[in-house]
Image 1: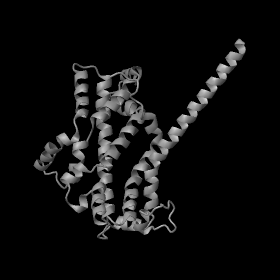
Image 2 (image 1 turned 180 degrees about the vertical axis):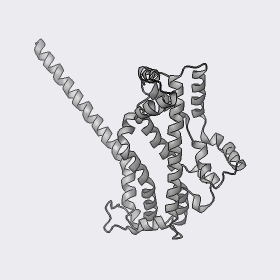
Image 3 (image 1 turned 60 degrees about the horizontal axis):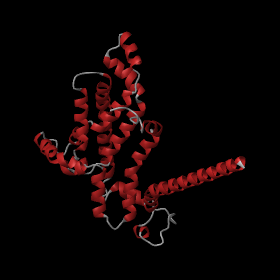
Image 4 (image 1 turned 90 degrees about the vertical axis):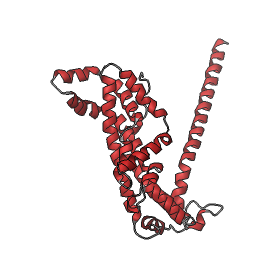
Length: 292
């Protein structure tokens, strides 16, 4: 009897486990579908005439792909190929911010993680406190500062306010807290300077955190609309979000071309993510389990 009860219990536990796994898989499929659906629609609509995008029922596969939508997107309403210039501007700004964020945040995080000095925790908490301040709160003071230093209508004006971030410092510090002190001490005994240790040991072995920070910083500036909208007025200096706003207002009835603009804007971020996905996924949880 006891053996039969044990078998029933095991069988019931197996059923519950399988049911739980099936439910989790179903939820995951639904969540992934919900995340992918907008991008699938954007790609499909970018190859259709504008009037076909809003037809019901919607045809996901166009009968005749309309590649001219992408040509219109690149040329712009004036036919001046200004979108290519806007893409270059966004790439310069986003790459510069990503590079500076990686360098400055890793240096600061290394100092806060591995150097013991008076007030270290106060400095760290002060940096973390800035994460609680919305950008809209400091936007007007930043704008007045940019005007005072003649940073309007200059790409450097888009880069300087975002050279580093509190989140970047937090991410790098949490990663480097788990870095073995013995390795650093051995390098010091061998006569390496602190900068040599940072460059040759710390930086090279912090690839997951660095890749995560670089992707997030790049994407943040690639999508940034509010700040460029404030300080950039010249057409040749506008970034992709500004171009999209202008393009959609001028060609609001051509949904196919609008979707083509969106696809081109999203493509570099997708390429960056898939290129560095191995490092990004391994670095996504670098700060879990570390003490603050």
